[in-house]
Image 1 (cartoon, helix red, strand yellow):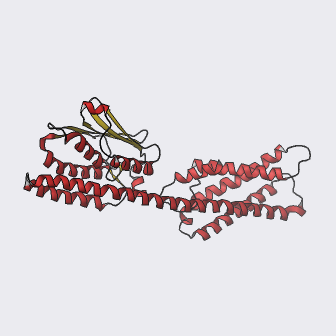
Image 2: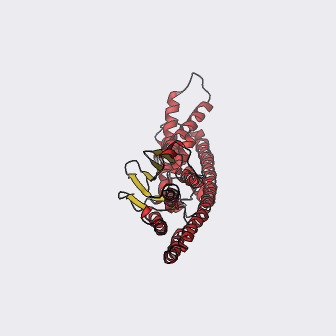
Length: 363
């Protein structure tokens, strides 16, 4: 449990920080260190022979001694961490072990001078200092080794996550391109000038989508890309396509996976607007809860009332792709839901992003 708390403290640190020593000033990390220190105290006390029962005074004094060393070490590493991060892992680890040993010897000297643990026999003084130094060295080396292995595991996990996200991203772009080209092809016979302009818009659209290869982009960039897509479809659908944007309260730097809104709009046009002679209204409604740091986006389109009793058409590949990327980037609290009610089809996504574009810069 203590190790899990230490790991949680590390996750709370910025993702782009690759230094293996976590931010020990974080409450979760400090709590984990305190629990680990108490486990060490129990081992040390139980290892001593007990003649008349458990020595609670010895436990309290040893706990106070060890906790002072742990808290001082955490405070020192917290201050020195930016400097240690510039060193090689081996050198940084050796310096950290040396600092822990030095603090252990210093605390031992203070406890010995003020006789905090009772009078110390002079013939055992050297053995006590040596024993405390070895315990501090072994425990700090083991903990630093654990931190290093965890950092390597996290680095590999992030590399696998990037590869998975890039694969999902690569799947959606050809689908987007083919559907856009089909829309333009339908314009060639009807209005060649509009078809030519649509080709130019598609060129700008793909240039914008490929300009930023990151998995997360700002909401303003995703919105601009989606508007370019809608301008192409507007040539083909004309007045049959009506749009209702309700996104005034969204911050421009809200992180969103690239090519998320566009597939939702594409599904709304293919299954909600294109089959209807009279067309219809596509509504885009977004909301960001600043208190909880949760973003919610819904795209709705009209549907045949009879379709409410029938399964939705299509392969749902685009929706499955979006849901997989949301889960990979924002965890299990991210969700994508599909619902039909009151003659409309709703596709809504929801995910936590309290730090705004910090995640986009980190991935």
